[in-house]
Image (cartoon, rainbow, N blue to C red; front, side):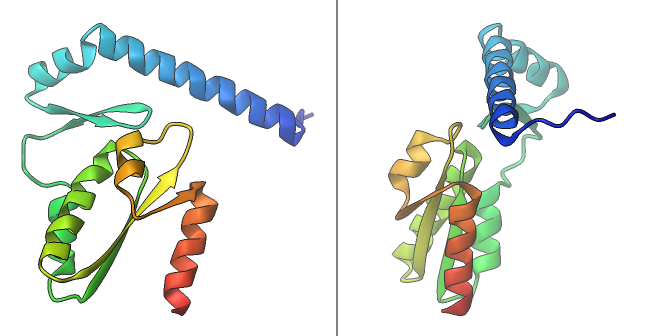
Amino acid sequence: MTEQLDEGAARERLERERARVGELIAELRSEGLDEEQASQSGLEVRPARMSVELHPPVRVDKGTTLLELAEGLDAVCFLGDDHGDLAAFDALDRLAGARVATLRVGVQSAEGAVELLERADLVVDGPAGALQVIRAIAVG
């Protein structure tokens, strides 16, 4: 028989698990294990939300991809929630300088990047808020 947790207990368990993941990531970083693995593998460490990301040493990121996809557009919106999305916000700044209408949306969460939220034109609360923005844009 499967034990079912009520919503409050499930939310509490999820928060404990998230906190533990955060502790493990912090421990990994403080011991330099992320940098050690990166140097052994020829990869680069990039900051991320509740994870350690190892990337190949190529200059392709969300910002370069956004610039490529935005070519020829009059308006571009990007929704982001962690450090990896800052490159896309930088790309939006470049596009705005080229007179493209841009909107930087920060998706707030317990693990979100403060710098990203500070740079956002609009901050929404979690995935539900992000969905509201997407729906609003879609219906014009």
